Image (cartoon, rainbow, N blue to C red; front, side):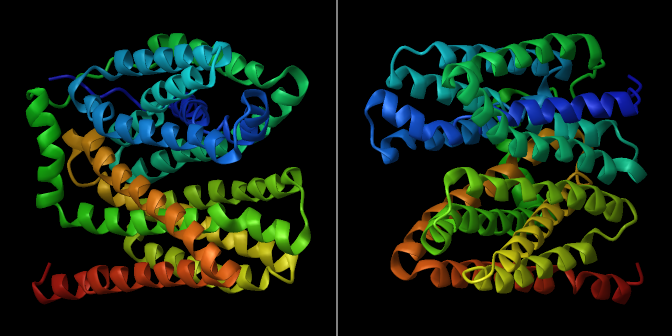
Length: 397
């Protein structure tokens, strides 16, 4: 029987860096859409196709690639996915046409799920009393990657053109791929079934694990709330305050508070407070919408609302993952696929519904939509998890 490698601080930091670098690959393009629209003579909607196809690629990677973390030696898998992401980014930087740029964007989306292999790996290597903190640490790297990707992309594009963004990012991912092979320990697969059985088992996990069903539903709805806000936020700020895109982008920096939420939620989960802390984070999300509504007239209220929204959503996300990873140690990559596919599906629904809501009733309609979904999350949590301790007490356990 193989002994499990030790999760050192250095290894955890390396995994957090990789999580941030890989997920950043999905977000570099967002600040460049206007530049690309001008260069290729496209409408902003057509240029925005890049974001959509990259997200669809990512969803494909979640379903097709991430479960392989249970079936393959993870050091090799991480080396390969990182290398393929590096090649895809390089191809984007050298793409001679918009159509090829779209195609390479899909390939990057599929392979940059490296972060979603690293998160369950951290949970696998951590001891039971440190699992929440380990997941929180790697997720902190992921959040930093999302946060800094747009800033890095904007600065590089201004200094050396948009192609330099992808070329430099490609070099960084290539170095990380080599480092993966040298630093990640050899970890035997936890599943030896056929590929067909491996993928079918994701559906079986949903059937057999009520915690996975509950937490996936709450997670998907919370990410829908996140998308509802960020999809329409810029429209309101431009209309109410005539803000430039650069200034609007600064509000993304407030998202750094989510890193704090990840660490807090991880520690609370390690102490056995994941169920109750989830409720606290969900209520924080609801309270944020009151301030976001008043943000039409007060930028201070709006900024505080963004902080509370991010705290609530990221805290809930880490609490969800901590609970899900307790279920089946040998299936953590497949649990990640189940949970994260639900998460991104919720985000897609949130984005679409937000655009419709803003078109119909402006910012108040967006706030009403976001508040309603946030309240629904609390109702689901209260109906399913608040009664669990009572039931357990009745049975004397």
